[in-house]
Image (cartoon, rainbow, N blue to C red; front, side, top):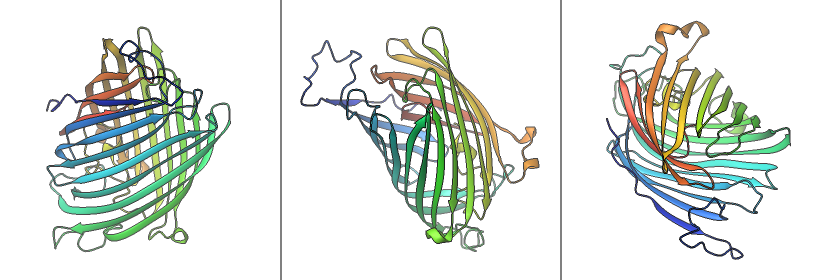
Length: 361
């Protein structure tokens, strides 16, 4: 599968009242504008969606010239599988970078399939269902020194799973998360962020440890806990080359609804997010980036490995899932180092195209 569309980009730039509008000789400079609007129409294909189309608008702004860039992004798309998804994601920096507030608000109507749980599930064991999802989350952190941030999080998830097969496993309501359910969870977050740029880091690191717990006292239908460690490191190489490395571990305990279980496709490009799911996840990936290479165009190559597992002894080398691919980058904003990325990833018996703003990690 090749890329289905090279994006059409519609860009608007708005300046604050005390800054003059740039002329044609200034528009490509490295001046960081107070407000910038980007609108990216997309057509793509993935293991979850088949052919899909939509739009990704994003606003980037600063409250002062020294403030870190805040952003508000929306994803809205429809697929040939009759799926549609609307997602709003704000990221706000306040008090000169001391406070960070981020979150999401999502609505999704999503026909998809259930293949069972485990890293050795068969593609033949397929049950179709449709999930109607209302979801929201918020996270707030405060700088506590030496590039460290400490904070809290809260998320809410209301799901309605409509099984399409009357005699299937989902229709029997024996699986946690089938039917109608609510997940309400709160957590603690510790983050280390020494990146030189949040949109296209070329040096530094970004590590996050998050502990979340869903409990009935919070209004959740299920009680479970999750521990997630996400570690990213960026190594600069000469001539605008960067090696980006990410390792992630997610461990869960308690009764986890099947739609909240981590999937290998959540981390490795080329896989469906519903094909391999289980209680725990471990994944590693690296990406070699040359951006820009010619003019505003850049190139990346990536590879990764990982798996989901229920018990520690289920994580075996002969069951690992591997991923590899290449991508093209278009440097839209030189000042903020914002890329439009087009990736093609190949996994085990699956592949997918990906078009998005900003990097995969």
